[in-house]
Length: 596
Image (cartoon, rainbow, N blue to C red; front, side, top):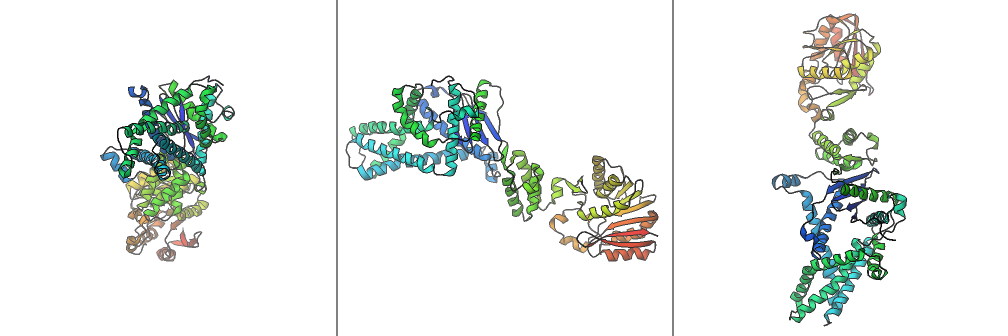
């Protein structure tokens, strides 16, 4: 069937995707682990005059496709997990203005060339010398060496096709060919139409490589014959090295001639020329495989992107904004935390859940992709947490009683034990009761009580910074709380039905031995004096003055402090029922005191 839509668009299979290249643009489409098709595109630089000169253009195209192909492979790999930029890479970028990707591409291309020269030029020469080194006929020797080269090439393709990942790449290669064939046939680019098209193509790189193998036989024979005619010796170690060097030097000529022949063959569907095409087309049966429908979708997406970009010079380019999946990000975050001595897998889960919006329970199994912004934010969080900064300070907020409160290092982080204090108090507080929250910090107690009960709530703290945070939380959550800057009751007027407090209760002598993350919290909210009871003593001696008859006090306390605090209130003689309440862990955590 003739070609209805002539196109110069060609392509290459990459990791879980297809790269297509047109006259002015290139696009890589990849199927991410999440199942979505991701596309990255770019504009191609205009070709120089040399790219239009026959023979020379072939050598340029060969080397250019090698470089661009390597870059495309590396870019597709970035979708499935990209390591954090190293300090060395950052140094190269800032100091020497060298892109780490360029270095990696250079190394990849160099290693690819070295491997190809060894497998397809040096090794055939060694094998030929071993078995037919005594043949004096240059053309016969080069023919045998060339046949060995072709045999190694075919064996290489067959062996690599046994690898699972390579087989998938060959399937994407098939999807690429089928898509181009479908377009050239004039059919609509649908999965069904593409599926029915041929997976071999005249302009395939496999055919080009086979032509290189064949043309090299003729050119090597011709060059060697000329050199022998002028008395050049190929015997001995130096002679063999010189012969190998000649092969390298003539490669541009070989690739140039092969390119021109490939272009000539691809322009005609003559049955006579099919004789010359046949070997390359047969090899494509190995380097391409029947693709699945989802692979065809990827190839179509890449082709359409290039088609649109070639037609519309104003069309914006796209960039992969993906850095692996939530699972790979979790593993990356976990390593950073462990390196910093934070051995809490749950912290890694919280961080990844925070940036991705995925539930913690799904972090280790979900294949959802994460963006560069999400990746960078998670790494930033992990580094701060690895320095011992509490997770709530890292995030800038904490959950409390179903609400989210802003926190910073100037307020204590609300804890579950304090939620229990609120729970008990809320059961008794009625709408329009007057409530005072002493040492409010972030305002967690005051705001929660006001929202849950509709009480008239005031809150006290000595820290301006803490009151600023508390005020912001009240506004954000819609709570009506009166905040007072005061050293306990110093600036407090009036009487209340309830006084609630979670005051500082750590002994001064224990402050130096606090866990690293606890030590990051404000000492003003932690240090309870020599015995940890300084604030309870003041609350016991002054609270009754600010309570209505039958008023109730709820206090949170530290482990093994409840009994001593209860005695403090008993000694004042103004209080009646004093009750100690255990938390969910069975620890005496809350003291309830009723005014006589």
